[in-house]
Each structure stands twice: as structure tokens, then as C-alpha cells.
Length: 323
Image (cartoon, rainbow, N blue to C red):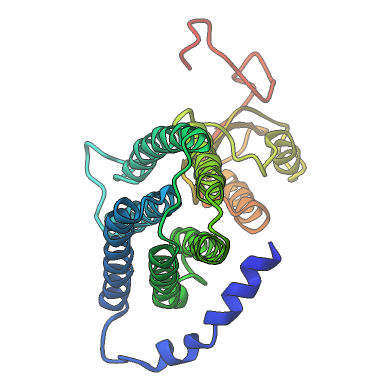
């Protein structure tokens, strides 16, 4: 991880400049312009690397182009999520359109998995039919790829402190800057020593990296679609914390899930003594404060009961398995 921080420090000096620039432009306009600029930069270098990779006969360049293309998609998804978050809820979509981003991420990841497998297969073939690509083109386009990713880092940096969505895209750009450096090193090796095997080796390395990231995206997206609890949270611990609040007899029939990668929901039945609605509102405020401060959960639905449910188990499954 140290290399991430090292490269981030290279670009961090621009933060002050970005904060002092265009004070007259609204935050929403500035965010949109920065995002558009980062998309244009990465899309341009993707096209250049694909053309250059074909002309130079370099699979490593094409692999890096696919990696940069994943950046373009990630940035578009980030922009889409940002704009969708501004849209009001509807009676048909009471949760809004936040999961559209998750669906798009799944499609993007599946495509990248397929591309990575094809590139690895082609790279293995290159070991048996060696072909020395143009080291000069690799160096030039690798350098421009690095500049494009650096430009994206600079453009997005002012937004990463308060938006995890942009933070993920920002870190993705830093990883691609590293990938471009690898291509440059490969081009230098080919230029100096005519190492024919360096190109397929770099191709496999980059493709495996993209494959690993894509599978990680699929795993995380699938958990959200399946309404799984966040891996960093324990439903049992949350239940015990809520149960420790005075006047609460037990917590049962609980559910913990993510609507999106940054939006966690919790609901449960809470058994209390016979009391007024006003008294339950005081308890509800305590529950909401606890979940927000300790677990960063801000969407809470509590059903208060007085010995209604026959079971006090934290988890509950109805007889038809469709609770």
C-alpha cells in the first residue's frame, strides 16, 4: 500500500490550487466538470493505447488500455451515482435509483473478466510464437497513460474527502498510474535488450490484476444485491448493544443490509414493557443515536412490541421462507 501513498503524495500539492480556483462556480457544477475532464482524459488514452498496441504489436499496451477503459466506466458510474443521488424518490422507486450503480458495476465487472481471460490466453500463445513489439511506442503511450491517470487524480482529489464514491474512483486511477509505469518499464526493457518475453509477462500481470479487481467488484456487488450485511458489522453485536438500552426486554426479527456501498439499513422488532407512544419515541431516539454514532447506520426502522412475537430469536424466518 505504500506505493499508493507515494504516488498520491506526488499529486497532493494540487489540492490547494484546486480549492482556490473557480470560487464562483457551484459545487455541483465543479464536480461535474472535474468528472467530465477525467473521463475525457482516460477515454482518449484508451483509444490511443488500443491503436498503439495494435500498431506496436504489444499486448501489454492493449491490457493497459482495457484497464484505462475500466476507469472510464468507473468514472461514468460515479457520475451517474452522483446525479441519481440528487433525484427525488418516487412512489414506484421508494428507495430511489441507487442500485442502478450496482447493476452497472456487475455488468462492467463481467465484461472485464471476459477481456482479462482472453488477454491471458493470447499472452500464453505469444510465449510460443514470440513477437518483439515496439518499445518506443510502449514508452510513449505508457507515459501518456500515466499523465492521463495523473490528470484524473488531480481533478478528483478535491472531492474525495467527503464522497466515498469518488474516493473509490480516485484510488482506481492511482492503481492505473502504477500500471502505466509497468508498461513504460517493459518498453525500456524491450528497447534496450529486445526481450520478446517481457510483453506477454506484463500482459498476464496486468490482466490478472484487472481480473482480481473485477472479481472483487462482483463479490461486493453480489452481496449488496443479495441484501447481505456489511462484512465489517456484526448483527449479534448490534442486537446486544440495543438490548442494553434501559426498558428494552429483547431485540428480535432483525435485518441488516446495504442498499448501496455506502448506505446501510437496519430494522428489528423491539420488545418493551407496556408504555405510551411518547415513551417508545424516547427509546427510538436512543437506538438511532447509538446506531448512527457507533455503526454509521442512519436508516433505522423499529417495530415496538409488548410480548407479541412467540420467538425472541435475533433472526426469524417465516414458515414460507418469505419473510
